[in-house]
Amino acid sequence: MDVLLLNTAALDIRSADFGFADALVGAGGLAKCETKDMPPYTQEEMAEYIRQGRAVAGGSGNTAPLLARAGLKVAVGATFGGGAYSGLDAQGRAFYDILAKNGVDLSAAKIDPTLPTGTTFIHECPSGERGGMVYFPNANNAFDFEAYKADVLRLAPKVVYYMYSGLSERGDANGGRDLAAFVRWCRDNGALTIVDSHTLTGNPHELIAAGTPVEAYRLLEPILGEVDIFFTSVDEARMIRNTIDPGHSDDTITGFLEFVASRFGGQGRTQLFGVTVKNGAHVVYSQNPEVRFVASRFMVGKVVDLVGAGDSFRAGVVGYIARHAEAFRDGSLAIEDAVQSGNLMATLYVTAPLSDRYGAIPSMESVERVVKSPQRFDSIEALRAALS
Image (cartoon, rainbow, N blue to C red; front, side):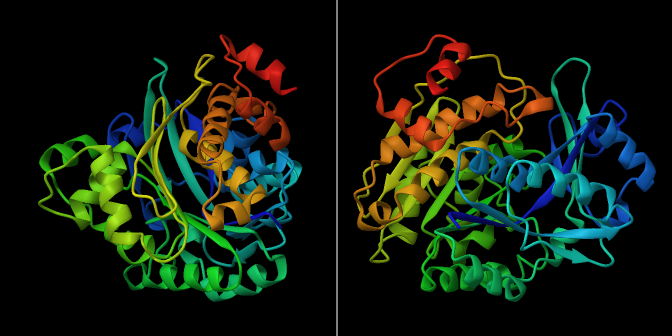
């Protein structure tokens, strides 16, 4: 197996009916909620939203199908809710079928007998603006590291990718130390590792301006020294540093990456830390503390939806690294090509129609060929033609 993605499986459902999301978190905000507060939609009503084409696979669904469509061997290990839809609830069945249709191995899937599948309700605003999002982890809260160790040994992935520190009660237990121990165990068993986090607050800009810590980001303290790969967004980088390095005087991206590399790097092995921005990514790679910026060469086309942009970027980077795992380890990876692979994959994903988010994903061979060429593109059509 090239990549095993673990933890977050959530069906993202969009509708103008979900104005309650804005009322909870404000337009464009995000809240993590408890199962007991799930809106009282019946399974039949959920199935109807799915039949209307209003649902897409979020979490690992933003990443695993892209890797599979690119020709990598990809598996997802996540926990779904049980129900009357061939053993799963309506949300779990939809998520499972979307990934299976796109060539993802789901042999590591688990079923929780009491909790529903993770579900995100997204308010679809008539204006086209990003509406509020309310996420219910549900069965994701039951993620059990011990249950997945057998899958890691059986599948022997080159990369183990744990999605979203901060979004699973059991996965985040013991202050993140359980996840850190699991990451170390995966490394000891031959896998490269990546952990990311999700924006854990609905009002990031207010918290950043005030310098307020976000307690959920403390989960990263035991993890960052263990992972091989970590990418985050600009807003998250600032909140992470405000939380685990209070009183610092440098709010720049370079300052954040130098801090992370000095505090959590230097483990006697190669690591990659990065911060994504709208037009590329800043990275620190290997044991060299120099921060490099890789500007995207592929910013063309009209953005349809930015949800999943970071996940699709990481798909491109992880896909490239999985194909060059030994080069990553010995510090000789062509890091700019890896990041450009992420830039390219993100462009293809966010410009794709919601009804066909994976249709434009090419093989990783094509991605690498275009990334290594000097060609520039003035339209998404020209980019897709070059990849065909």
